[in-house]
Length: 142
Ligand SMILES: CC(C)(COP(=O)(O)OP(=O)(O)OC[C@H]1O[C@@H](n2cnc3c(N)ncnc32)[C@H](O)[C@@H]1OP(=O)(O)O)[C@@H](O)C(=O)NCCC(=O)NCCS
Image (tube, rainbow, N blue to C red; front, side):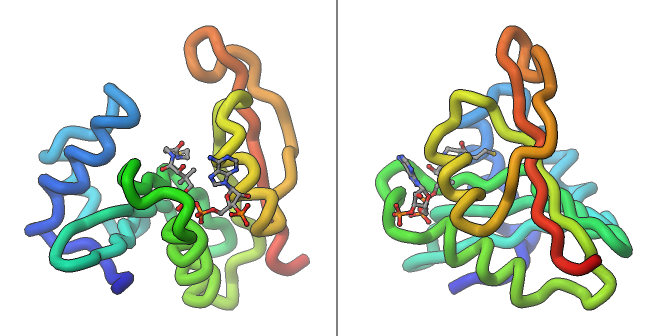
C-alpha cells in the first residue's frame, strides 16, 4: 500500500535512509518535513513494514525528487516504479517539470528514471564529493 508518511513511520524512514546515505536527515528534521507545506514523503508499506519511501518537494510548477529508496531485499520488484507511478498520477495540473539529482555511477537509479522519461539535463561536477552527479528532468507540460 502506498500512502503519505505519518509520524509513526519516521524511525523506519530514518533507518532506511541512513543505510544508503550517512548525511540523511535526522528524525527531528523528518518531523519538520512532515509539517512542511512543500516537502512530502510517500511510503510503501507491506505487512506493516515500510519497505520504501520517496521524498520530494512540490512547488507550483516543479517537483524535485530528493530521495527514493527501496529496502535491499525488496529491490527489483517494481516497488520504486509503483511509487513513481503514484507520484505521477497525483501531480497537480500546474506542474510542468520534474527534476532530480543522481550520482553518475548509480546505474540502477538512472535506468529507473530513464524508464520514466527522465533525461540528463546537466552534469554537476563533483556534486557528490569526488563524484559527478547528473541533473535529470522530465517535462510534464510546456
Ligand atoms: C534505485 C532503486 C530505488 C530501484 O528500486 P527498485 O524497486 O528495485 O526498482 P524497480 O524494480 O521499480 O525497477 C525499475 C527499473 O529500474 C532499473 N533498475 C532497477 N534496479 C536495477 C539494477 N540493479 N540494475 C540496473 N537497472 C535497474 C531497471 O530499468 C528497472 O526496470 P526493468 O526491471 O524492467 O529492467 C533501488 O535500487 C534503491 O533503493 N537503490 C538505493 C537507493 C538509491 O540509489 N536511490 C536513488 C537515488 S536517491
